Length: 164
Image 1: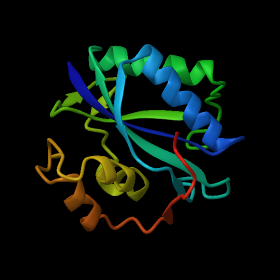
Image 2: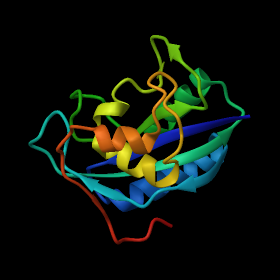
Image 3: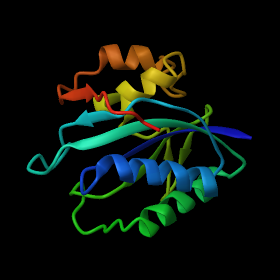
């Protein structure tokens, strides 16, 4: 059994609905969601001229090997209508694996931990809400420490909407 930490997000359509749908599909096909953060609204990263994102961190208990989990998440994105036309462009849903236990992996499909995690406030804030003392397996720092040290100035705000 693995504990995978995911970041789900999107910036097109009914963002809250898409996050809820993604959680339901992840629960159905990937394992048991044991914890999730509030929803955070985040300015776009990379290509700035696009709508803001809703993001949420999930803790998932799964029996799937990391690569199989990634393939299943990609399948869920496709089921939900994700189109990969512009790198870092607008999307209805984006499902990323941030960490799986203390696994370190570098492959063509998946790199663990997610290589951009320490420099992305929009990923660290929701993850720190559900797992502040979780250790990054390369830096040895906690997620809370990484958030304090993060130099990313992108606007990230906790939403008051319910994450049911």
